[in-house]
Image (cartoon, rainbow, N blue to C red):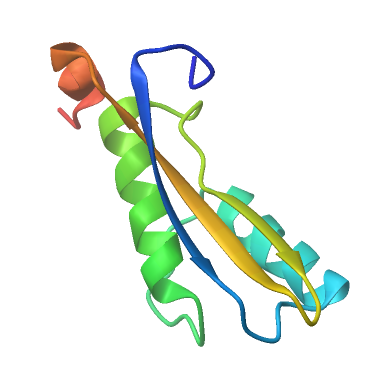
Length: 91
């Protein structure tokens, strides 16, 4: 559970132009899709981080993105603090 005290949240925020709601919806849907993609045309870094989190920590560890057009974007990545975070390694 990423809401407990055993999770460290790494967050990056900017105060730029933000992301329009429709584009943010598409990015979130792209990250929620657990299908592996080789030929991505954007957001590959975020997708790579999400895939690694899923493999190492489980599906409950999801990147969170919030953005307000004209005000900026906040991206938060959950990292488990417990030493058993590698329990879901690939066989």
